[in-house]
Length: 213
Ligand SMILES: *[C@@H]1O[C@H](CO)[C@@H](O)[C@H](O)[C@H]1NC(C)=O
Ligand SMILES: *[C@@H]1O[C@H](CO)[C@@H](O)[C@H](O)[C@H]1NC(C)=O
Figure 1 (cartoon, rainbow, N blue to C red):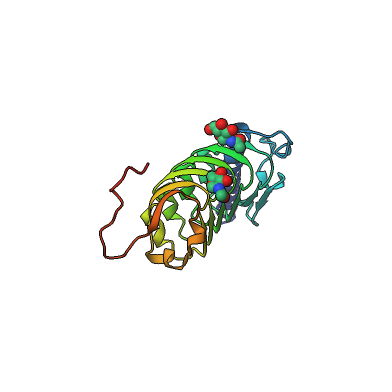
Figure 2 (tube, rainbow, N blue to C red):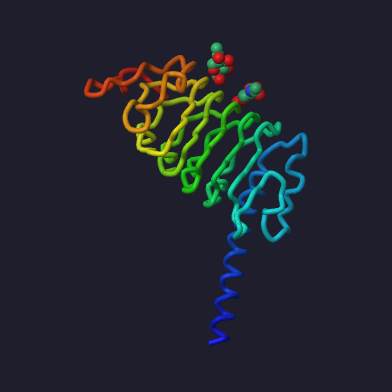
């Protein structure tokens, strides 16, 4: 009995630490990929057992990462797909930096995410349709980048989405009006010079009329 109990405790210990290390490795992949002129990531030491003592990282009681707060930190470089492994993450705050390249499709794996703030960076490419898997998301601010392509229709099924901002990009196609998008005003979409007005439900979709990439 006692043996099995101790065995179980040891297993739980090993697995919780393995997870924590996976999350530390994922964050360290970001550190390696970015330029950090102000050394805000200096405390990110990959030899520690978990990333919970690193600055700008917050963990829950089980040493799993719940927040990444790196807004306005003069970071540049690419977002790494490894960020999608932080499965307890609630807040991904990377706004007002100079991140470039695409939004990794892997961010759709952040199934507990409440807030995705990537606004005011230099991101290009499409809004990944995998973001439709973020079923708990409340706030999604992607404004002030150079994102292109259509707004994925599947995002309209994000029932808890309260605030969406994709303004100040280079999106095209039409603005979806179904589902959670019915409550967003044109402010969410402004200054996308190629984006056409709201879709008329039941009418012909003018999605494929002109090239939109
Ligand atoms: C954004 O990225 C492009 C290269 O893709 C670069 O030429 C431009 O200077 C960047 N913008 C800013 C504000 O750094
Ligand atoms: C429109 O968005 C682009 C891209 O983010 C930005 O550079 C530009 O300043 C914006 N224009 C206005 C009038 O806000």
